[in-house]
Image (cartoon, rainbow, N blue to C red; front, side):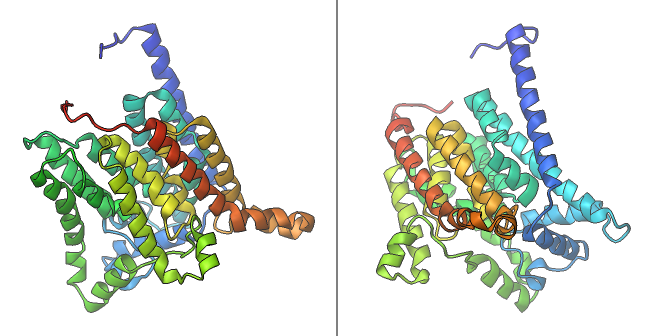
Length: 390
C-alpha cells in the first residue's frame, strides 16, 4: 500500500472525518451515561470496594462471574474516585468506568478503520447499540473482543514460530481472562486447516491454561473463594431464555438444562462449517453465531455482533438489527424502562411494550440467523492453501 503524504488534502480530509467520528462517539457515550444506570453498575461498586479493601472478590460476592482482569480495572478506578471521601465520588467512579470503556471502543474503531476503512469504524463507533451498552449499561464485552481482534491480527499460519505467535497466545488469553465469551474459539482453532498440528495445540490450549491459572491465586486463599469461582464463574448460567430456539423447545417440552448443551453443540458445528475460512472471518462469524445460538441472552450480549455487522453485514441486516435492538433496549426493564412508563401513562399501548419484551429477542436472533447465512454464502472466503502470511 502506498504511503500517503501527510499534506495530501485527501488524507487530511479523511483523518478529520475519522476524528469527527471518534469525537461524536465519545460525546454520545458520555451523554447516554447521564440517563442513569442499572443493576450492573451497582455490582461494579461492590466489586470495586472489595478490591480496594484487598478482599477476595470471589469469596465475598456472587455478583462477579468472570476472570480477574476486569475486577482489577474496577479496583483501580474505584480507588481513583476515592468513594469514602465525598458524596460525588460514586459518579466520579461511573465517569471513569465509562471513559475507560469508551477508550476500548475507540481502539476497536481505530483497528477497524485501518483494516476495513472509515465506513466500518463509523458503523461500529456510532451504532446506537454500542453507544448504549457502553454509556448506559457500562458492560465490558468489547474489551474481550478488542483483545480477540488483536490476537487474530497476530494469528500466524506459517510453520515457523515468531513473535506474532506469542502475541496471539497472550492476547487471546487476556480476552478469556477479561470475559470468556470466546470460550469455543479454541475448538474452532483446533479443527482449523491452516495451522500445523503443533500450532493448533499451542493456540488452542495455552490461552485456556493461562485463563485457568489466573484463578489459582484466588482459589487457594480459601474454600469460599474456590467455591465462589466454581459456582459463580464456571457453573454460572444467566437467563436460560435461548430466544432463537425457544419456539422449538416449547413445542417439544425441552427442559432448560438442555439449552446450554444444544448451544455448545451447534456452536461447534458452525466451527466445523467454517474451518477453512480466513482467520478474520472466523472471528467475525463467531461473534454472530455466539449470540444467535446462545442459551442465555441479556442486554449486554447484543453488542457482541456489532463489529461483524459493521464489517461484513449488509445494509438490511445492519439496519434491522440496530432498529429492533434499540426498541428492545428502550423497553427493557434492564434498560431505559420505556415499557413501564407506557404501561403506566398510556395503557392502550401496553401491547407494544409486551410485544417488544416478549418477542424482541427472538426477532433479533432470527435477524442474526439471516445475517449469518448471508455472510457464509456471499462474504465468507476460504483461505487459499498457497497463501502466505505477511
